[in-house]
Image 1: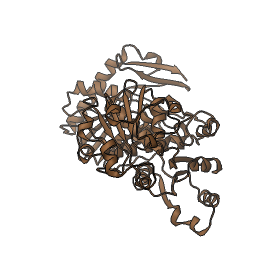
Image 2: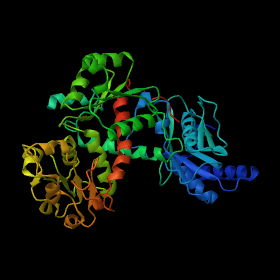
Image 3: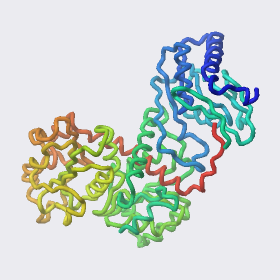
Image 4: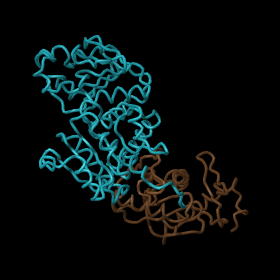
Length: 172
Length: 329
C-alpha cells in the first residue's frame, strides 16, 4: 500500500482493531491464556495500552525503555528523559506480547529482546506492531502488524500521542 | 576556579569530567538525576546489567581508603558492563617510587577509558583530569577537603525522591562542615537546584571560614537550627580531628550536636534524616534516629549506585564522535 493511501487521521483506531484481531487469533491458535503485554517506550507503550484494553488482558501492562540496550549508544549517547522499565511481573515461563509502534530496521526489537532476557526466561515472545515499513536490517518479523507502509527515501513515519494517536509522515 | 572547572564540559557542553558541582548548571544536575532515575530499574532485573559501557575499562584509582564509595563505583561500572580495575595506590606503585604521572601514563597505555579518583589532597582529581590523555574521563570520588560531587548528587537524588521539589525546602547540614568535602558539594548542589534555606549547624570551630560565600545560614545551636527543617544531613565526625583542639570530647559533642529523637521533634513532622556514612553511633547521631523511620541512610547507599551509573555513562558519551543519527526502529 502506498503511503498516500493511508489516511493518517483516521487510521490508528482501525489499524489497532486490526492488530488486536490478529493477536487474538494467534493467542487462540497457540492456546495462550494469560500473556504479558510489554510496550516499548514511547509510542509502543501507547499502542500497547490500546491493545491491552481491546484484548481485555488481565495481567498489568509492562513497559520497556531500551535506551541502555541500543547498539548506537556510541553514536547518539544518552537521553536523560529515558523512562525506567517497569515489568510488574516475572517474565519467567510466561508468554510475552512485545508491542512497538513502527517496525523498521528491527534494531529496537533486538534491543528489547535482550533486555527482556535480562529480566528472565520467557516461554515465548511474539511481536506486534502498529505499522511496519521496509528496511529491515536484522532477521526480525512481526507476528501481528496493523498496516504495511511504503515510504520514499528520507521519509519517516511517526506515531504521536497519547491522546489522540496520530500517524504522521514527515520528510527527514 | 571558574576556568579550572571549565574542563568538566566538552565543546558541546556535555559532561566530560565530573570533578565538582561548581561550574555546572542546574540543567546538568537535573539531567544527572533524571538519568539516575532511569537506571533504578536495572536492580529489578534478574541480570542486573545493561550493556551500555561494554568494552570500556574503568579504573578506580584510590589513593585514600574507602569501602563504600569504591564499592558503589565498582558496582555501578559493572552494572554498565564496563571492565573495572581497582588500584589501591598506597599499597602499589607510588610506594616503589613511581610518580603519579608515570602511573597515569601506564594506565593509559593499557587503554583505560575512565579514572575514578579518590585522593587525600584537594585538587588531585583536577590535576589528573588536566594531565590525562584526551580520551579519558575523570570522576572525582572525593579529594581532600574540596569536593565529593557524586556523594552530593546521590543526596540530591534521595531528597528529590522523598520530597519531590527542591525550592521550598529547608535543609540543615550538621557537623564538621569546615573540613567536609561532602558538605561543600552538597551546599553547591542544593543552591544550584534552588533550595532557598540551606543551614549549617556546627560548633564555631567547625564552620567554614567564609560561610557567607556559600550563601548559607549558620547556627551554633542544634535545637535552634533544626526548627522547621525538612531535611537534616548529618556529617560524620572525623575522629582523627578529635585529637586537635577544635573539638570537645565525643560525649560532649553528642550532648550538643548529636541528633536524638527529642531534638528531632523541633523539625517538621515529616523530616528526613540523611547521613553519608559511615555513621558514628552515639557521636553525631543516636542509633534510634539512624535506624528510625525518618532515616533514609540505607536508601542513600542504593541511590549511590544509580547516580554513579548516570555520571559514568554521561561522561563516557562525551568522547563519542558527533551523533550521526542512524536509523532507528
